[in-house]
Amino acid sequence: MIYPTNELVRRIVVSEIGLAEAKAHLSALVARAQAGETVSITRRGKPVARLVPVERCREKVDTAMLRALTDKMPMQPESAGEFIRKMRDEDRY
Image (cartoon, rainbow, N blue to C red; front, side, top):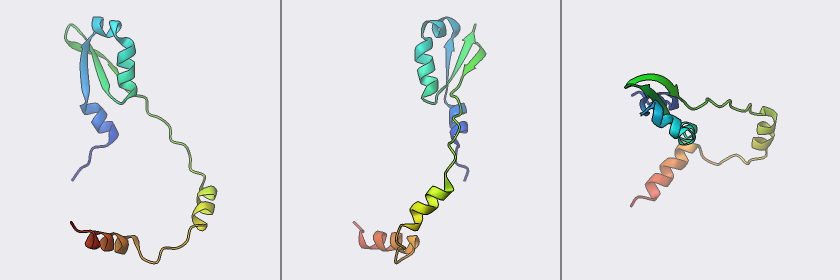
């Protein structure tokens, strides 16, 4: 099964708006793009521009800090799979 990525979802969710209306509501269109929506701007019914959200750069993970944090955590007595199975089997409704 193929799961849609954020990029694929953004390309699917496209609103079309005429140029004159886009000029009148630019702030709202920018807010929609910032929220992840893609807006296609048309002139005489034909797409001429697309307003898309900016890809944000991810911050690098400080592996030394992460290792120091996880080293302080106690080891769990059972694996995650065993824990989930036990929780699932005990909490049937």
